[in-house]
Length: 218
Image 1 (tube, rainbow, N blue to C red):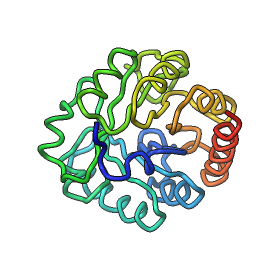
Image 2: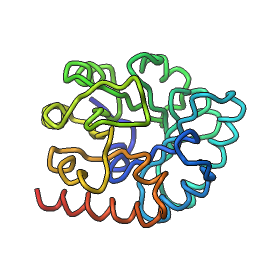
Image 3: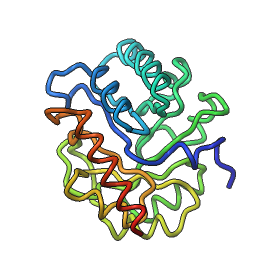
Image 4: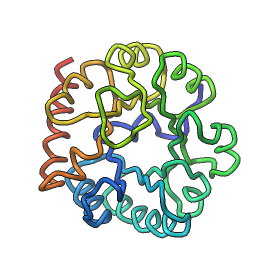
């Protein structure tokens, strides 16, 4: 399978979901700036309950933050917004637009990641052309009520099978991120471990360090 240019290099490390519903009222741009400045590799904007015009404006600002800090920017669910603001790609779930339909809307260089809870779903997503494979929920999470458990065993099986970056997601924090790396994840996706932290930059640095150390010890 041919990946989008440099996908295997750009999807890795700490991947942060910035969601206004899970930032305790703090400015999402400040959090995105703090996280990318402290070493986060990827930012995803997820804003489920806002008009598209609002999400578009937010995405346009975060695009600039990510470019200034050499980070990848992903828009949740909405390829039309990703294409309009020049984001690096879109992330979709099992019930969202199919990958092929996203490709019609996106620019050729933009990427599509997809969420999966089951091994079979992950393989199907890879065969459909997902540029990265998100696996979760690895642990119990408070940011999504409709998530399904996946666990470390599923993550390990997917990482061993697919020739695409694997992103672990769900309940990941400083206490368990090493296990995620040891299971083969290329990237660890976090939300409240950073967005609700007293110091988002310090929390990001700790996660970057722990994840990197665990990867090098494999």
